[in-house]
Image 1 (cartoon, rainbow, N blue to C red):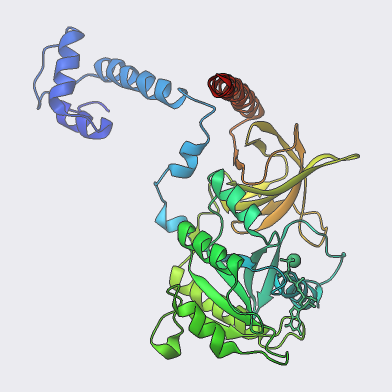
Image 2 (image 1 turned 180 degrees about the vertical axis):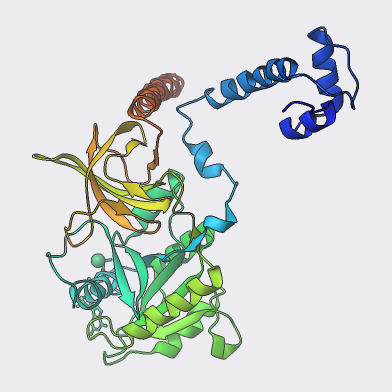
Length: 372
Ligand code: GTP
Ligand code: MG
């Protein structure tokens, strides 16, 4: 520190040298760029800036979204993570059958311990590579989560039955995927059925910019039978291939943050939530803010119902320890301590109540005008 001149200090504080000189002048020290400063002067200045910086940090403890919008990335800490996949498609085209098949063959098989629990998400494995599936098919869940700012899906698998073709909810699903900006992989399903016409599906989908590679486009199509498992491994392979292109990475060293997949109140255990970790590593004991509630992670279990102490990015886990039941799509972030988590959670709950109150008065006014 000793012997540092104004220019060095300016660099260190990311300020303009002229600003430093001006500030020093106000403190009664007349100086120029190259003059070295004594320790006391440096301390007074640093404290001045330090206090400012601190005030900014503490400005809005309830704004947890800023952590998600924070673009600072520590390149060195980045590690590849599993892709997060949502399955969408028209009613009865085979979404549940596909998820069930994947769960039966890729989740429980060969892995020790536990019965598969329904936690709203799970990981499938192919050649030691993991894929995270959100087990909440249906556009409502997808839309609800996106509406709350949770863009958790990396890849959409669009299931289209080969004996039924493109239907209204197929088109809806395409629009959702487009709005979310996720690539689409088409699973042409039920190819085992009589009357299945996969080519017809391919032709119909071209009208929606989903052009198969063999027709010169860049959309991956896989013909499957979810019921009999035909080509399902190939579908997983294609998902992993698409994931490679996306170069999905996350930093496991940060405080954990992510989104709620689903949540409910359990009589014995209190609020039970399935969360997807998107950055960082979540630990048992972590103080956490989730949507408009908060708590401390009391227990953490994986999809096999096994207790775990820590979970890395793209892992879905079920946690207990929150004060209230959060909503699907709520974001969570781990805080420095329980006090901060509580303050943030309570402030967020208060603001949410105010918002409801304000919205309520608008509705009343509206109603008034409408009845006039
Ligand atoms: P919703 O949840 O109602 O939107 O339907 P879904 O898309 O989840 O469809 P689901 O998996 O329930 O399948 C509907 C029906 O199609 C069931 O009777 C399945 O057994 C049947 N099915 C699904 N996939 C296949 C398949 O590959 N081949 C045949 N033959 N039948 C299938
Ligand atoms: Mg279903």
